[in-house]
Amino acid sequence: MLPHLDFVFLFRGVAILAASGLLVAVAATTVSQVWALCAALRHAPPRFLESACRGRRLRCRFLALVTSLGGYCAMGLTLPLGPLVGRAPRRTPRCAEPVVVCLHGLYHNPAAFLCFRPALTRRGFGLVLCPGYSSLGTDFEAVAQALAARLRVWLPPDAPLCFLGHSLGGLLARRLMAEADLGRRTLACVTLGAPHGGSSLAALAFGRLGRGLVPGGPVCRIVAALPDPPEVALLSLASPVDAMVTPLAGLAVGRPGWREEATPAVSHLGMLWHPAVIARTAGFLAVAAGKRPA
Image (cartoon, rainbow, N blue to C red; front, side, top):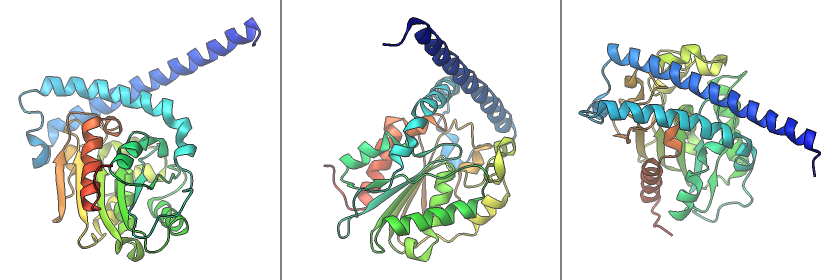
């Protein structure tokens, strides 16, 4: 039993920490939403997002605010679980067993995929990997090379792969598929809210990696030059109210072979927890890998 005084100090510390986290979430939501509204006044959304909120813009904007705040809170609460989710696999995949590799976004960690892992398991994937990486003090190519090296250590050279990437993780998935040994055994790739064309909001990011995501920046130039591996099922999911990728035109891949779909009105982070987004992603990967629901 803690002495009464220690309990009071502990309670106050937790309350201050929670209040600070909520203030950060509110501030981040406000900045991103205002920035996105300003960008929307100057730029038209890509065609596949044009009609997603037509006739219900007020409702969509309300959902954007609510799911943005909820997404930041969920991120803060689950971040401590990242090392557990991102640990090395306990077993090697069986012969010809497809492996799903999940790549989180900027400033997040493997805990981003807490809701995706059980959904993918239910669709028949026995091995779902969520390698983590640092978003600070590095650059895009260094992160990609480190992730590729880790996959080569964790997996045998003939294991079929499916990639799932949220935000910056979607661009990293495209970079990893450009590696000859990884690309030739890739079956499918799904990106969630990936800034394929960059985001003007990245000008406010901390670190070289984040600032490299501005339109025309180093990350965008690298990704634009990457080839897509042949005969791979490619899906880009994007929200019509994404306030982190601004303008929304940055969500468009603009390449043949990619299927681009609009999700329900949900925030950039909210995509990680939305049942419809999770179901569509798991279903697409399962079909591409020849899986059936367990």
